[in-house]
Length: 267
Image (cartoon, rainbow, N blue to C red; front, side):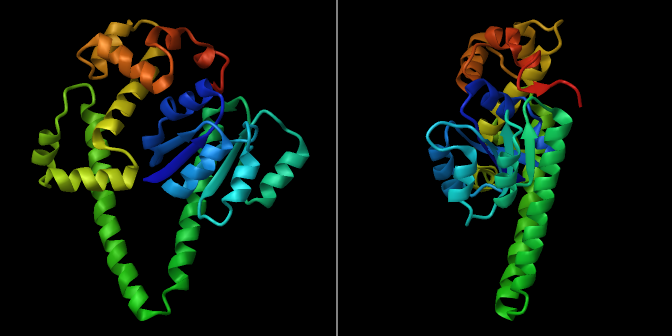
């Protein structure tokens, strides 16, 4: 899983990027969201994301300055902006930005940019591997680490697939332990280290994302949506949804987000 950090000061746009984009389908997981450049710098340094999606215009510290201050860290950057002036694009290129996207962006454009960022991450990893192959001890350590990573990646992928297949029903950690034959502490620790969040946090995020997808289909009532997404109690669904997105399910369903907002519905 590629760890993604989103830095965007407009809450509705930020929440839309976090919850309505099918990150799991792109082998990605959002590990953090920042509301300004200062917060973004702190989270980049602490969370070590693989991909950073940043708005160019944020209070206090803008997206490009945020990238400049964290340039020594290893990640792939995507810039999102409403500006199209050349000087911004040139500075972004100078900072090694992978993609420069103009709002409103399409789902296809975003996916293409993420694919480019992932490819950049793979190239960087290959380069790092080759630079230490000359040292046999380090090489042996790398091989052992790679073998362990392959096992962990397979487990995490299986866990994410399990969530995708079963999110509409009640899921208990005991079910996970029984299904995958690992201890609870091992699963909890590894899932957190690989995705940046607990199993339950990811499950709730996934359910909210699915709820947002169902809201686009006007024949679904909010009560039906909550049940289909694994929330047995509608009031609890409302509380969780508002906490995650900053608005109630009803407000979100009526929002411009799915009409003329941050992302076009094509692609």
